[in-house]
Image 1: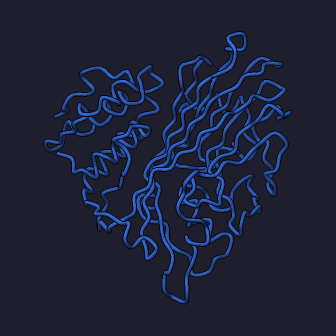
Image 2: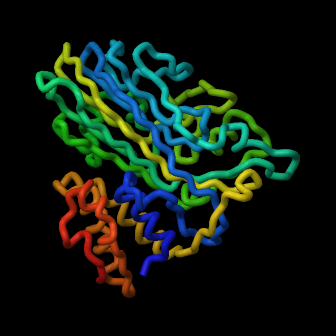
Amino acid sequence: MLSACAAKFARAICDPFSLEARGACIPTFPAAPSQKVTLFSRFTLGVGTQGLGFIYITPTLAADQFTAFYTTPTFTGSTLGALSATNTTVSGVAGLNWAGCPYNSANLTSTIGDSEEGVGGRLVAVGIRIQYIGTTLNESGLYTAYAHPTHLNVNYFNGSPMTVGSLGSLSNAITRPVTREPLELTMFPVDASELAYANQSLGATPSNASDCCYPWSPNGIWNNAYTYSNNGVLMGAPIAMICIQQPVGSTGNFYVEMVGHVEYTGELCNGVSTRTESDPVAVDHIVCAAQQTQIRENAGKSLGAAFMDGLRDITRSTKQFAFDLSESAAYGYARGATAQTQAMIKY
């Protein structure tokens, strides 16, 4: 049976917007007490004058760093690689900060000598949901969503700025028509370094600070020579994106929700940290299942059903390994899951 921490970790990946995912943690070994935080941001995105809109996701642990960049109706560009190597103040592109994030970059990089005085963090899972809210007349176009499987820079492709054509050629990209049904994309840790807490730097240089504030992003790589810093931190590269294509002249508006499940540990977390369990075998199974999810989604499955299929396949040849999703009514409603995917799953 999954431990409580492992069950929440799985829930945060397969349904990050679920109430049951709040307080999620990663059951790695050793299991230190941690402050578990769920972050939300809600906003509207606009398609630009050339019929192109996008959102880049740069998941961060810091309140004063951007966790996403998105277009507004004043965007006049016609290419995805609109953000430059030294500046993000592109006309019609806005930056987004996490609402309610408890720590800023100074907390995450604060050190005195060899003593870590601040706080270290790690991202458990990040979800984004986008939904068309414009007029019926402009309800047309195409979504293309992509999360890099190893969290490399999605603003660049083979040494050149990403284009709509390049994005569509990626086998893991998810394409859907623009309708009033929401499209969701989930990000999660993909290797051992991302499962661990981001190391606090002994010197708060922009590159070291980037490791602390953007643990999933390539360090110092935005457009191959990125030098832009925000509050003394080299901004992390985007690891995922959603592109919207509509006819030129459309005035499509989209409602976007982002949720981030985060753990913090350190001296600043005293008094607000709670117990975290260790279940390293479950971590391996959950991450492996999650890495297959996007491919299964392209076969027409919902995100939750695709994740459960992957977990079933991986655990079938191992010892008895159960995962109960039936307690979450929100899961079945949000995902349209079948009774089979909600049931207790054993090999």
